[in-house]
Each structure stands twice: as structure tokens, then as C-alpha cells.
Amino acid sequence: MTDDRLTWLHCSDFHVGKDRAAQERLLGKIVEHVQEQVASGRVPDLVFITGDVGNRGLNAEYNAFNKDFIAPLREALGGNTWQGRILAVPGNHDVDRTKANAFDRDGVLAPGTRFFDPSSEGKAEREILFPRFKGYRQKARVDVSGNWINDAAGAFAEVIDVRGIKVGVLGVNTAWLSKDNKDQGRLTPGVELTEAALERIGDAQVRFVLGHHPLHWLQEDQAERLRALFGHHRAIYLHGHLHKAEGRSEDGAGNQFLVFQAGAAFQARDDEPWRNGLLWGQVDLAGEHVLVSPRFWNPSNYDWPVETGRFPEKRREPGSDWWIYPLPMKPSQTGLA
Image (tube, one colour):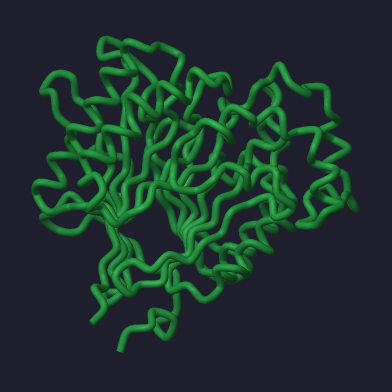
């Protein structure tokens, strides 16, 4: 019998290396929150990390992230008894900008480029960028090898069985072309790479796409084509970068898909005005909807209350801390009897 609910935890923008003492403390608070949720019966089946793990793409930053967050998080989730997965993608702060920062971004985005082809030819063209992600690729200790960045596929795509639910997870690198403070409108994960990877999870009942940047930060034509792809595949796109929780239903070539943005896991100390946050999510296949619950660290009360005002109150499930969206898949695709 299929358990038709899937729970996930979405974290983004840790910036490890920016403020080690404050970050170590706050990451501990996230782990404590997860422990409390697990004790109450909310155990995430999947943990999604959407980039900016490090601050400058350095080995020491990922070593600290593994020690201060990944290892204690696994213990909080049940250690070896936890059956879930932690999956991640890089962000612009995971780029070592001391490496190959003089590449021609405009040339890469020019019409007719083969740069993002999922082929040996495309891989050869992208090789100039591989050293920029070496720290992330080799040191981030999550449950998908960072070697996909150096592969011809240029993305990872897996179908994971979660208690009988076929969950497709696609990870893309929206930070390929990140290089300066003029990134907006000049980025892409590569439409060709994304399309080929989406086909590999086409049989999944639920399809997540993990990226770092919001779609409106990408090159306009690339963003439009990606919206069409996400709509065609009825995807749920998870990202970070803007340090605040948001969610919406979007149209892609006449089909609906969902977009959810997590707040920053760390952007400020307790006495600064910005909030640190995370996002809980749940798919209900039987009810054909998605639920999300944004949380933020409240230093005044030492807890993680629900962050109101980030999602429309009209979408709030009455009497609960969850906001509800229609699952962007046809009922016939849920696979439920």
C-alpha cells in the first residue's frame, strides 16, 4: 500500500565562511528545530539544499558545513535508520572566482552555442568552468556526488522510491556563468541540459527541480524556454538566492508548475534586522495538493515560528500553519488507485 504523503525540508543560502561563530550557532539551532519536528512525527523524506553552501567556494567552508550541519543533521534525522536523502546544488557563492573568471559570458549565451549540449562536445566547452566548482564538487558531503558538474550530462537526475511514491529530483547549476555583481539576466543552467535531465525523470509521479537562482534572474530567452519545460513536465521548482520565502503557481506554455523559494539559512546575526529561515513542504498525492510552511529564527523567543506575510492568506489552510497549492500534475499521473 502506498503512503501518499511526501515531506521535505528546503534550506538555502548558508554562506558558510562569512561569519563562522554566528553560523555555527545558527546551524545548531536549525538542527535543534529538526530534532523537535522529528520528535513530533514530522520526519522529512528528503532534504533539499539549493545553493550558496559556502561563501567563496573554498574547501574549508565545505569542511565546516559538513561538520557543523550535515553530520549533526543526519543524527537528528535518525542516523543510519533514516531512509531519506540530502540533495544539493551549488549557487553563486559556491563559485571560486579566482579561477577562470575571464570567460566570455556573452559568447556562451549567443544563439547557436553548443556550450550547454548534454554531449562530449558540450562538456569540452564547459571544461573551462569546472575548476570554479572544485571545492563544492569534492567537499560537499551530500547524497549526490558533485561529479555531475563535470559530466557531459551537466545535471543530476534521479527517481527515488519513497514508500512507493516515485519522486523525480533534478539538480541544475544556475551558477555556471556567475562572475560578478551584474549576474542578473545573464545566467542559465542550460536549457538543453535541463531538458535532457527532465526526460530522465519523466516517469516520476512528482518532479522536483533544484536550482539556486529565481527564473527572472536568468537570461530572458532561457527563462522563457525553461518555464515551458517546467510546465510541460508539471515540475516543482525549488530555489533560493533572494533570502526570503516565496511561492507561486506559474504558467509555462499553457501548463501550470509551482515555484517555491526558501529564506536564507544564514544571512544575519540575532541583533541584525534580517531573518534567517527555512521552508517545510509536503505533497499530498491523494488530495492532489502541495503544502508549504515557512519558518524563521526568532531570537526573542529562541524558536522557529511560522513566518506570516510571505504567502497569500487566501492560500492558508484554515486553522493551520500551512499554505496550500494545487499539485501541478494530472490526476492520472499520481499513480494512485
